[in-house]
Length: 141
Image (cartoon, rainbow, N blue to C red; front, side):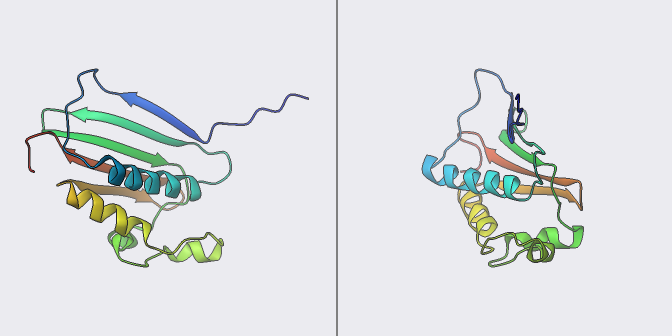
């Protein structure tokens, strides 16, 4: 019996070998990206993939990392709230999805501490894209 299981995480890399350097605390960034990936997987139903794109945007003096899922999405009016302590999208309570509502506030604090920013695009039942923009070495820190 041949059972094929889809990979839940697909990594798409689109960057030059000479990716610009950023000032960073690797452990803190690992925690931030781990939180973002965990959320993407948690809110994606079944075998729908989570896509990770790494793009270097050197013209604007930044490195952009995008994490996109095809999950339940966030209502537009709730997107600004996701960085608040203990906030959880109301629909997650109906689906019994665990969590304390701390993850995104921690991510924001880490990225802010690196002089970066987080951009979120989401649509209900169509998924979410989170973009982390980090300044390159010598830009903004």
